[in-house]
Length: 367
Image 1: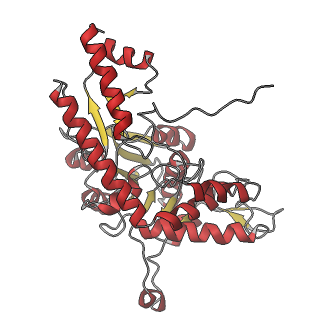
Image 2: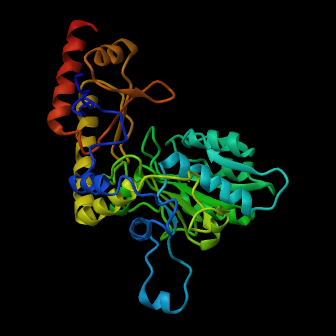
C-alpha cells in the first residue's frame, strides 16, 4: 500500500497553523504516549506542563519576580495546555459560569469573536450576546457596555481576530466586566505569540483580565494539538476541577481526560528554542511581508484593509477567488466575503510572488 503524504504548505495562505519547529517535532515524538491528564503517574510530562504554563505566562505578562513570590503574590500563571483555542475558550466560559453565581448567566462578546464561543454557549447552557464591532472591526465599547447586565458572567475581548487581525480595547473591556461583577477573558489564540513585540495593550500586563487563550500550535510553532489557557488566579482553574477517584491524581481541571503529552512537550521545546528573539524576528518578518502584500494588491487596484497584525484582507471578486482556488491556492473568505491571507512562517515572499503572478494572469485573461 502506498503511504499517504501530508499536504505541503507552499500554497496554503489562509491557515493559522504552520510547520512545527524541528525541536518541537522531536519533543512531540518522545512524549507522544504520555498523559498529562494523570500528572501523578506521568510526573515528567506534568513537570513540562508546569514549564509550558510558565512560558505562556511570560509571553502574556504574568511574570513573577522573586520579590513577588516572597510576598506570596498570586499574580502568577495558572492553567494548562489545551487541545486548542476552542477548548480554552469553552473552559474560560465554564470557569466564569461556575464562579459567577447568577440564575441565567450570559456572555458578552464582539461579533468578531471566534465561533468557539457559540459552541461554548450551546454546550454550557449560557446565553451568548454578540455585539457589533466599530468601523475598524474592533469591539464597540459602548455596545459591550449596553449588553452587560447583572447576569453577565464573562466579557470577551479578542487580541488578534481571525478575520482582520484586530486587537480589541482590552483595558476598557476589563473595566466594563469588573464594574458589572463579571470576569474578562481575552482570546489571543493566534495573536499571543505576535503581540509581545508590539505596543498593543492586550495581556495581563496591561489590564486586570481574568483569563487568556494563547495557542502554541499557531505562531508558537508547536505541533498540533497544543493550545493554552491561562488564569491570573488559582481560583480560575479550581472552578474547573472534578474529582478523579480511580487515578493517582485526585482531581482534573482539563476538559479532555486522557491527552497526549506531545503538545505539552512540543510547546516547551518551541518556546525554549524561539523565545524571545526567534519569535520577535518572525513577527517582524511577517509584519513586513503582510504590509508588502497589501501594497502590491493596492497597486493592482484592489481594496485592502489596513494591516494591524499580519493578516491581509482584500476584496477579490468571486470569479477571481475561485480561479485562484482552481490553481490550488488555499484561500478563505471573511464573513463578508473578502479574501484573507495570513502571513504564517511558511508563507514567504517567494510564495506570494507566485500568488501575485497567478493573480495577474487571471486578471489579464478575464478570470
